[in-house]
Length: 194
Image (tube, rainbow, N blue to C red):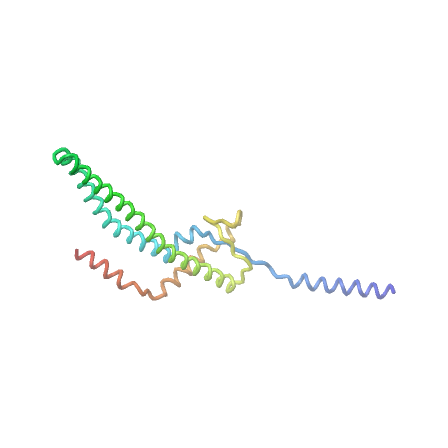
């Protein structure tokens, strides 16, 4: 009986020793997502694209706003000369135009926000997929995100792989053929000719 208990105890001990030897090291790292989005070339290109669109469409709207301001200024000087009935009619027209310009500004902002939001969501999904694949390829058990939407309260700097991720993402982006590279160049040439 004593021999059986000793044998069982030794067996349990041997099995438990083998299991602790099988436990592998948990490899973790983190990525500073705010730095990633500031330094990732595709994100910079996307931001520049929508900034340029906002400026161009904003210029068109600004020209209409300038015309409106000129009309409003001339209305002030002509109101007394043309009488109260004319002033009321013209004032109502100017007020309606001002309201339409306000709606146009809001619509433009919403349109640009919606368009850029779709592309930004796609970009973020691609970055997440890339980081997941990177983690699998490099043997990470966990890769955390810090930055604007922080999920890590503290991490040692030695676990920061942000620069590696940015470098590889930028290399991948540079290697990807650009479908819209030619139209952008043509647009710049067209603007230069004007």
